[in-house]
Image (cartoon, rainbow, N blue to C red; front, side):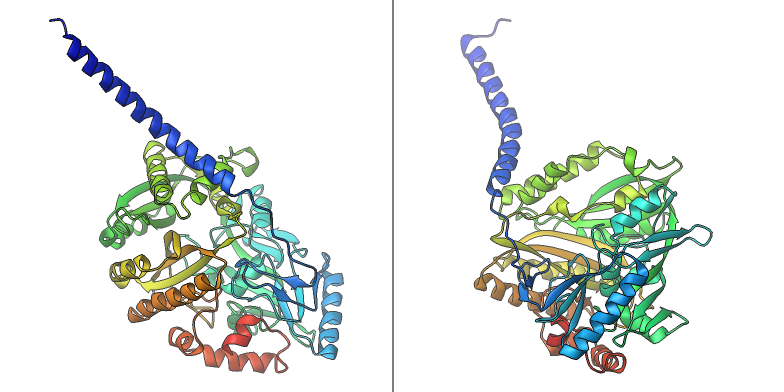
Length: 497
């Protein structure tokens, strides 16, 4: 039967509307990402000579001098002995820096000497014992690229590879390796130069107290020189992802991750858009496959700038937050079982989320919550996060097993670490609000017998810090035992001692 003119017009309008919807669904994300790119074209900030900052971009501090250590071991050791003697004679404090990704002045002693350890990055693999001998200034990226050609990989490390190994030991970082304690568990031993220039070996059997203090000791006990790290085989892994309700996260984590011996990595990501705020979480995990892993050099690289723009496009944008969630979840569904090598997964640079706007900065928090309290903690987060005008960019969930090594340990039982990333404007008002928010988040953490991570902004008072770390007073007393003249110092120590 022939269509009437009205029917034909109706069908035409339906096609027109459908075409418009399709065009908009494609054009809007493209325009949003293009706008994000344009908005970040601001002049780069530079640090004046005689000053230093850290990843917070809020700790610009005048220092006596910054010293790059020598690359060769004997030359470097002699250089450090002379510098420590000079510092003692001039009554100067000494701080130790790598990639400076801490955010509370942990690598900065005001008007003191800052040691840049990055040049000291020698490496040698003991393949028989699976031990990597490495200079403390090497980055994880350096180590991963070195090990990749030998079929090996890092056992435990944090999520980005452009941090220094010595720096990561000093903050006792943790990663998203399944059923893994913090980095401390993979450290066999290290050599340490004390304030008097003496070099000692530290391990679980040799100078064990100093070993425990230096790991997570924020450079307050000496200079880490050479490190012996456990390594593992590089393998091929397949990616999987499921979307859950937060109340089901622990049970599904047990089923899909812990009960599966093939899983090596896992993490969760909470939905942070106003729509379904903290009501959905993805559980992402990587399962070992029998295929041979690709070498890093031959692996295809994704468009890193596009990934960065998708992330940066979520700043101060509800549309951007929804777009990022939808894109990530769509990709998770249409590319199931995608293959990666272990080293590919570990070798990601923080430039993937880099903020190029000098008017704002990205700040991290992390809270460690006992497994049984995770659901309650997420429930109590909602009103606190909704009440702040600080822009929340991300919450990642990572499993952390108990730490038996570090003195200032934060994982004293099985916990989930919730890593928050916020975008903060560089204003006094936003700094004050961040301080208020940090304390509110720690209050609920303490309510559930949790702890928090110390390498970030110094917004927690001395007394409340000791509620999370009751061993802090003993830690600072032992600091004076090993460094009685308090030569090694930084803003963290000056604030909390």
